[in-house]
Image (tube, rainbow, N blue to C red; front, side, top):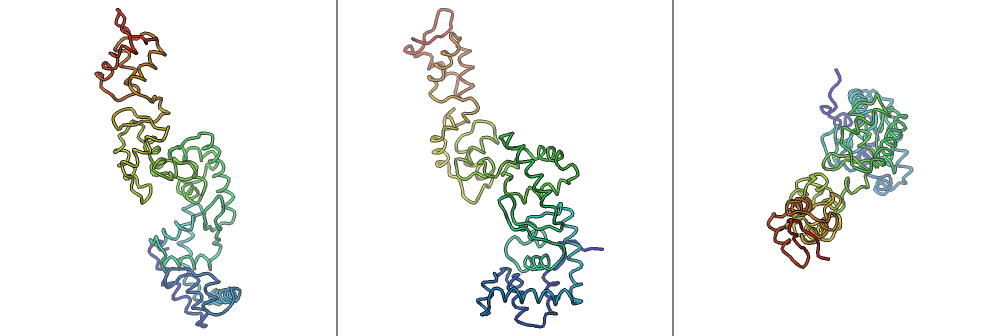
Length: 346
């Protein structure tokens, strides 16, 4: 029975296996190269400077140590780890972002010797291959060389669809549309490909979109505010907006109510609809005072009754009916006819 990947002590396996390397300097270089003692993987340059040798010589020593280990019986110690890795790759669609791979297998989020041990096993094992990060993907690992092309085709298909939509999409839609390009791909594999992609990302509300969209990766209070309104889909007081920003943990920075209020005032995407309460302009709300709103309504509709005016104003402003009535009493702007309907003063 194969052990679960999270129960394997990768560090212990590597420590026992490299015992076969008799050259102490070679063993020390391997430990430094993979962070087997402190979790920090050292570069060829840094190791070379420490030992007074060239980068190329460090590489040669590393390769020689690998050769010794692969030819020894100690290499068989890695079999449980290889089985666990193979199972993990199969579950994840055979392509996994490096950061998630290391953290998932070791339960360690930060540099740690156990992460270094997994990296070592992946490097020495077959057929594991590391894809260095590109404009499309983060640095990832696979146990199938052809899988990157499959992932690229799917991601490009999804990007085109998202670009046509021009808006964030829910998880259910991603699951549905991906079946057109990859009908046999599992849900877990799909999410692994999306996690490895640099071009598609998920926001704090679980919605997907293009990584550069402010609705996906908001860069400041203004973008975060806009995203909160899009999610809530209702007018909000500026203090509630600040609370919602902080609750959703966009990043480590706290949003202060006054900062949010300042952004709401300055940004034309937002419109004041009540005392300290704002809405999105794209929802159809108009800027201006209640009196401005009434003027616009009468200009567009002609003669209207008091109740009709109130109904239209309340579509644009969160005010009391009495506020509308008080504004209608302004004889410089509005005239009440004998039939009770109001019209604009020309």
